[in-house]
Length: 459
Ligand SMILES: C[S@@+](CC[C@H](N)C(=O)[O-])C[C@H]1O[C@@H](n2cnc3c(N)ncnc32)[C@H](O)[C@@H]1O
Image 1 (tube, rainbow, N blue to C red):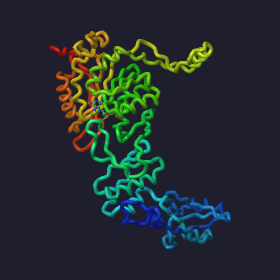
Image 2 (cartoon, rainbow, N blue to C red; image 1 turned 180 degrees about the vertical axis):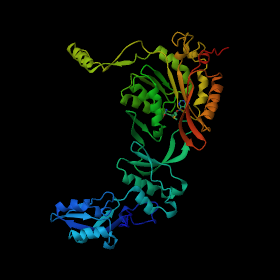
Image 3 (cartoon, helix red, strand yellow; image 1 turned 135 degrees about the horizontal axis):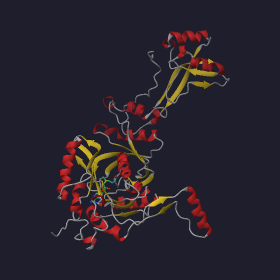
Image 4 (cartoon, helix red, strand yellow; image 1 turned 90 degrees about the horizontal axis):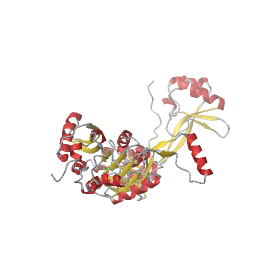
């Protein structure tokens, strides 16, 4: 059945606005047809096949209202009787129900972000108008094209008004802090408060979005990598940011060295470790990635992590807690550590796609006695004789190559150049996302070749 023209509920057009949104001008009264019936009859009208497609179905509007005299008013989508389909008119006549007019007052609150933007932006900008935005905590961020910049505050204000959880709206500018990778941003509307609380992977992250790197689009990638870890792992996160790999990994039992050179990231990393109650498993640091890699091995060796906790059953938990209470001892956690302590790093995460590959040289001779931080120790005992006891390295990078085969050749060549030796086993490339035309983000995962890790650098 074709839908006939219905009353126009679009907001009044006010294209004269530019810098300041005047919400008071968005008012409109629409008149619709209505049928007044006793309460018992409302259902008959609503369900009648003859009335199909005629009942009001506009967003945020009820189709049946109660009147003061105890009757019901069924609202129709049409403003004029001549627009009603014949069978609907005949049905209403058969029910001896005359049509009446009903006025509905609409104001700024009724319309959506898209509706209001369509009423204020110049017509030539309507197609492609920025209705979508991403959120981080209470902040909505948009990335406005140049032609929308004269209207940026209008756009910001509408987004702010229409989204209850948003307190701040910013426009991400096209410049990124060269080293620490966070966006420059300008306030479009709301409070200049950039410290957010953001949930991801069962953790809560607090950080200043204007001073540290955060990208909610990486959520699935964070989860994918953490999923590949086991609770026995010791993870060294070289470019940890505020902890989106480190904290979920610790929550599953991994021990983590988490490092970031940005003092602000480090500050919030420490806050997040505390807030998420993983301080026994995560050790934050604030160093250059190369120095961190070089010292990571000795750090874990000198201060091993406790063994991974083994979950115990509910009954065992109750029994242990009762016993502790009876003996006046503090009650222990629900998981009990078991097995030897952890002193061998098993995973390195390197999420600085622009340049992480250039840090790979730090793995040359990492486990050799020539690595000054190792202090002359022979690490072949700790790191075993098997290739499988060498750490895995997960290194993010960009490549122009969109085809996985070609990207693998490109990325592998660059990795081997930095390591100054061939990758051997367990090499895989994962396509993370397309960042821009000719800019694909990948994660190469490989087992650190034993020959490279034990390479004697003095030779
Ligand atoms: C792309 S961000 C990734 C952060 C985090 N892993 C995530 O997924 O959100 C890269 C991080 O590396 C940090 N960084 C940049 N240069 C560094 C360096 N030379 N050493 C250590 N960290 C560095 C930045 O501060 C930033 O937090």
